[in-house]
Image (tube, rainbow, N blue to C red; front, side, top):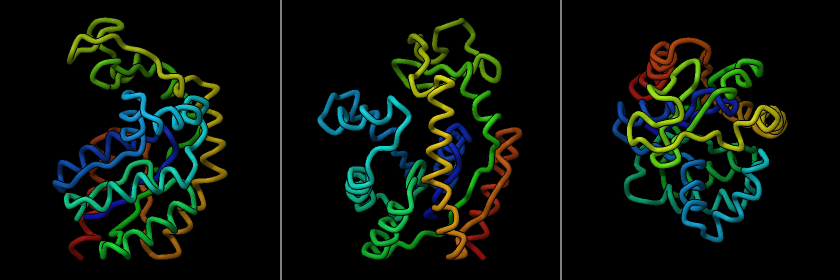
Length: 217
């Protein structure tokens, strides 16, 4: 299974990607996680990425493509779930080249559809553990103790890219740059869309069914 998950920021790609990776026993590869690891280590790549991410902008294609090429060439990437890549048409075209070089064609691209107003509502109230990265929401998934992670007792914080103004900017960027990626996969008969509003289990079932059909039919 080599699956690309598409959808606006805050559509639940990360949550679903983790579950799908466990189900299909393949790596979950998220550009956000890779960049956050670099930023945590204060590497040059991390410093560069933070200049863009903190303001809701996309990291330049050349930087992302190089990072992803290195990751996808590893032996554990015979199958994978991609989360947050490709985000631009240029990245989608580069991914196709990488996969052709490696002899590992993309199996399916699934677009998780969520309206903008729902995305903004989800962002308001989201908190992240500063130590383990666990995600909470004051309405949908509140911690047992306000401001404290249930898992590691770390302090919960609001990421700068979860501020409402930043979320709206990220959505504008998404519509301008990422929506052409949906058309890219649709033209290649690799695209399926699912409704991203509802219970996580229901959304997972939709994606899993599409992925299963792509692999075994």
